[in-house]
Length: 382
Image 1 (cartoon, rainbow, N blue to C red):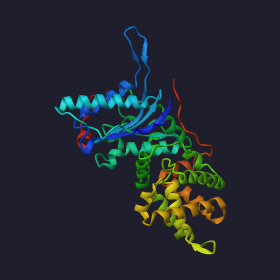
Image 2: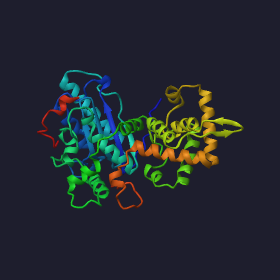
Image 3: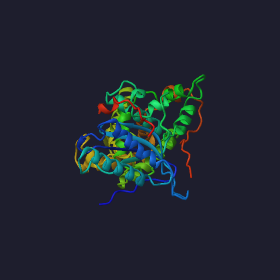
Image 4: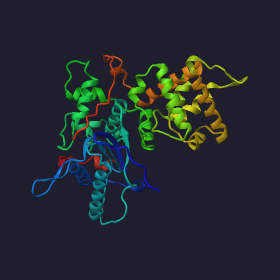
């Protein structure tokens, strides 16, 4: 079976990650991290022949990164739509070099890299915080800028590798904090990206990596919709999920269940009568949103909730019909869906609530373990 195609076009942003096979270290010493980063740096530069003619343009730009002992995370822009080739060369060169230095052979990595298209501001901002706080969550450092092998230090006043492109995230930080006066670049970056990721946000980022995006709408567009617009979006997404088309999750399963519990606690339950039979609307809603919003497979929903496959399918079909009919069920479901997305993505209340309201847009401009962390980055600008 072949690998699914990646959504990779010139100017697209991607979360890229990989880790060592069987939890073995991918980086054992600082020189290992430096060499891996140097392979990425090569892919971010054009190549010319001896006559000065361009052989290939730069393929990627690195916007953010974090390297830990057994894995890495990158935020990269694909400049030419050749992300797969750029990462294939970077990883294969590194593995050959690592094996030669370590007197070993065989596979070092789990396989080809994982990636997820970054197509919204909300996803971008949560992802940057996830990358920056990766070493903090691993208990290697107590703050992002203290991690020697991460980009947070470069944004927060430290030394910047020449191949790291700070333009995109600096623009996002300025825009997200434009209502705050007297801030310099470091303070703006900290205000925009300095909040530690929650468990829901971490789960959401990691769950999105498990399922490739099919371009089924953008988070920013969903957040800006009216209640009627959210319902119409849900109807379409539910129809696709019923046909077996699962997109990358817009919310985590834990957020869906948590919001439903909160809805029951704050507003109370109510009965839904269908064909003379009383049904629990939140039971139907949970199945429908776990499938359409959290992007779970039927087997995953069975593992989470129990029950038979036929019973889950019947609940999903009933949910779909009620959603299309409108009324109280559709109104409640739309409210729960939107709240689940907000909980999963960690919308920054202290920034978004006070900022002047205007349509959001994706800030993308298309253009032509612990032993490693403790090593001083004396040759960081590879």
